[in-house]
Image (cartoon, one colour):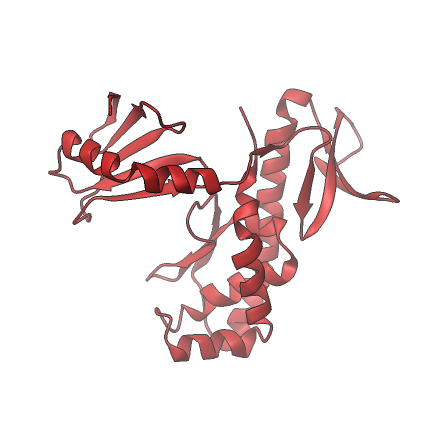
Length: 248
């Protein structure tokens, strides 16, 4: 396997691997105890994490030994669906057609419009900026929905999150830090509201139980009785949500 490397930083290198149709990132991490590889569904990149003292040649050998696994997971990624005029995307679980309507003085950045054929999202502004404006709007909508549901579940369970963050997380729908910060993927706003609600409840419960033991699941079920329904939806459909994004 031949590869070429370009230094990006002391702990991050990008590789182009012959025969692999995806960028490869080599990351040195002070907490890493061994070499690991994963495929990022949002960035469609292969990420190899290694200990600080590990050499690039060792990372190359490790990746070469796992190329079949990497190719298999890359092949499973859904085809990219770019934000473009006429594209159909899910929004809160319902399919909506994107309409890039150009600059409009009296319209919001995005307006949700009901039609006989189904919902539409009318995105204002110049065409070259419409996809980015749409994504920013979706992130803001996700934040509003998540903030409301986090607060509801926190009151219900008598817990207090420090704050929430909404990001483009590649491997988790949500996470809870030891200091009470809850982080979520903005793509949850594409899923049915039940699913977003479940992930909010899941992370709130971690404020009391930083594990997945019986007590944790008891808390989630207490505040989210339809937990299993939402988990099944995510298991069967969650990967597809990573296909929608701005394409340069």
